[in-house]
Amino acid sequence: MKFLVVDDSPTMRRIVNNALGRIGYDDVVEAEDGKDALAKLVVEEVDFIITDWNMPNMTGLEFTKAVRSHPEFHEMPILMVTTRSMKEDVFEALQARVNNYITKPFTPQVLKEKIEQILQTA
Ligand SMILES: [Mg+2]
Image 1: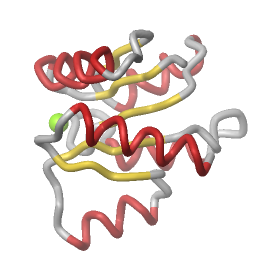
Image 2: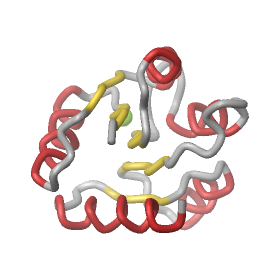
Image 3: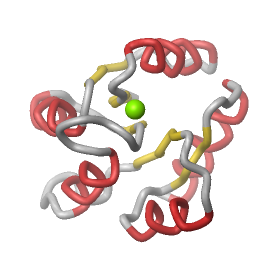
Image 4: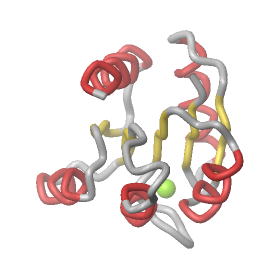
C-alpha cells in the first residue's frame, strides 16, 4: 500500500513517515503542498493520502476538494492531520469529505487506528 504524505513542514513529513514505518507501512511518497500532491497523485500509484491542512499554494482542504472531484481519485482514502481542532474546522473538513481527521501531536498507535478505520469502511 502506497501512501502520499502531504505537508509543508519537512519535519512533520518525517514524523508521519517514521510513524508509518513503525506501524508497518514503508512505501511513502511525499509532497510539500496540495499542488505538488496533485501532480504526484497523477504519476504515482497512490492508495492512501495523509494530508496537512495549512499549506501554501494549495491547502489540504482545497486539495481534498480537488481529489474528490477528480474522476479517477474521488474515492481515495484521505486522512487529515492538523493542529486545527475547533469543532467548526472538523465539520468543514468532513464537509470536504476527508475520511477521517487526526490532530497533532499524535502517536503511531492513533495513526494506525485511524488508517485501519478508514480501510475497513472503504
Ligand atoms: Mg502546514
